[in-house]
Image (cartoon, rainbow, N blue to C red; front, side, top):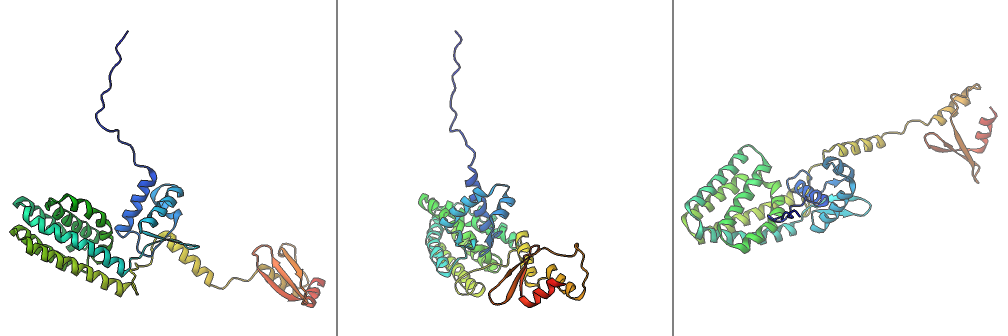
Length: 315
């Protein structure tokens, strides 16, 4: 009897990411990088078409995004990207300041020459993105620099806590990446110098000042751009948004004359009317001596006196 081959496990079997999770991550990233602006309306059909999925995972992802604070679901209106308030900004960035200042202090104690050289490389990448006016690249370089400082702190708790607020900090930083870019990266350079000198107190003080300046700048930007406590983006420029604006403009225009009304004008002036020009209408007699007529083609309705209607029918 032949021997049965043995199977040796080499590790956990990798499974594909569930579709609803992939859609959730994709929408979150679109919000963070600014593709979906604060206050923008989210249309399920448009999102499903852009991501190449059905509307069901989009609907599930929007529910999760509301729970996570990325999206607002408004009754009878739909889903909208959440607009951060000044209070939310202050709370999150104050927590981030506590974590970042501790990271800078510990990084100054443990960083080697090679670590500092890597920080200068990330600094140069940020300056290059700033010179190219690439806001997304600036945000990514900023996140990479702060993440590396956290890594140099050799603090496992900080390394676990900071990523929990990093995604929302990236979202907050996107609108101010370019206007605050020069000052922020000059502050980064001074922090790197303090870390390279091995001065924990100076690195901590510089990082605290850096995070405070970012918080103050962002809160001022909210007040200036978004009105009372909210940051809103420009009007959406998606294809669906353009279609909705065109429909609104068409509704504002005067409705063209109903064919039945035009026929009534013709029949009063001309006794001969062919069947081809006669529209389909229905009339209902009211109590106040008026006849309510409705065009069966365009659904337009109008009222006329019963005497005028009888005279017109006699023709």
